[in-house]
Length: 468
Image (cartoon, rainbow, N blue to C red; front, side, top):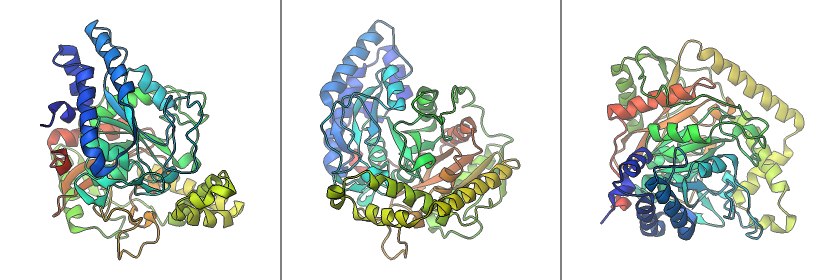
């Protein structure tokens, strides 16, 4: 029988701990039982440390018994994408080229914050090799599947985290997003995810893909993400580009959307073809925002065609990544990663600087756009989840994952906050997401609008079948 504890949000768990209805040990045992059930189906985890989790949960239960919780997330089960350092756990990044030996004695900044606030670490989740693509399969860990249809992809590159949260294997996960990597799998798996403004969550070690890569929460709803973001934001000297001390995003979470100026772009001016079910579900979500008092206008930002610039930046990062791998080990790498790295090696410094110029111009255009609109709303993905184990949908004509993610990667280039909220399912029961994008530093506004959609009921979709 499914434990109801695995269906609760982090906030609901914390309320239960405070009231004494159940303990962190109860919640952790339930999450570990869920992992044992779903892992053979979806392959969301590369490592589960039940002994460590139970020890952390026991200590948390004792603190709650004394009414002395350690922090904002004391006793809440959390999972970590296996590209982020976690003390005591090898971080293998989906690659056979990373050795398991070593002390593994350092936490990434966001993981250190979670630890300081008493979170219980269940395990590390799957990623494509070094997070290079928008689906989750790797030479080391194999294919991660979609909880709503095991024949479909979970998306990526934070696909293991999305599947884990969707299936109740911990209400919180932390992922990375260099071109959509928290938003793509969240949309495909039917959960919430936020790519914060670049630098709000410090990152160390730095990504080989440079300042495209953000760290963000993947959760059951927007309110949990706000709580998690308040924990993981702030200063860390190891990241020279962090934004420093920032205010709480929870303070305005319940302020609603009344009076907000929201632009709705269904297809970037006809550039993107949508599945009909996606178009209908996103339009309903936009209608809900209008019903809540927002001013909606159909308006397309001047996105242009940033794909070539993104590819130059992304492929150059892949080349740098592969350069660090010994020549004798390169045959172990994902062939697709080797392909884009080879392209990146041929890009000149001048081409890289031209791409950077184009990136900055896109950022200025979006900055001007947000002088007229508080938020931009788009579909998160133009499609729902496709066959697992491939980089692009069959017969799509796309060569790389960026061909089917036109709504996500541009906002890594501009470093803006962007969130995805479930807003329906297609005829096969596969989740659909709506994307909310704010100006740089407007993380609180994005979360506020997302929370309003959750409160309105728009985000309620059927639970995935493997959850029982």
